[in-house]
Length: 213
Image (cartoon, rainbow, N blue to C red; front, side, top):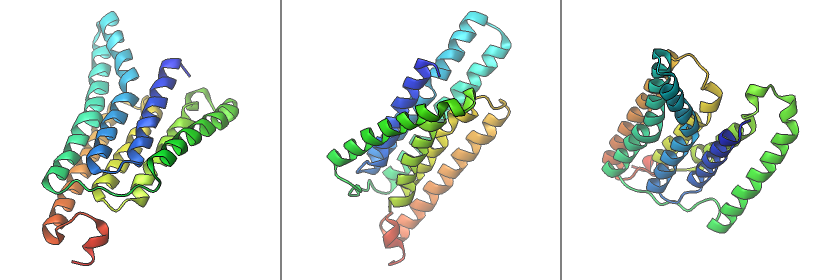
């Protein structure tokens, strides 16, 4: 694995973990944007350099596809969820563990995961050497999906989980890009719409309160 790609994945994993332990909806959305921006940045720069040095149509198409995917994940999807928060409320939930324990857990789990990943990396095909960090991002994303009562944070977790798969599907045919992006944007819009309707009816977006109303 190239050093730049490894650094990008480590940074995006760190942002994913911070998002998983965020107190507020607004902060979780911010870490979603940072995770998406960092995870696709290296690929975006590579495509830009290839476009500048090659100046051919195939390089232009590749750059546009990567840029649209990067911009949608890092800006459009977070803004959709942020709009939902503006229209409802910025929920502050007590995290599973306090800040010091959360930071220690993030560092310890990441280091252990990297150690075990490096030990078993020789057993994986070269194109799958990013699997340990990808799996770690999926694990942190699942914390938001499973343990939160704020549906907007759950939506953030779904987006983070989808973003974490980007390194594995980066070599997919360009024709799949519009479908993947369109599906995620659609899920975000529908999710935000449902949350807004629930907020109008129950006066809160906390899932635990919806049954009471």
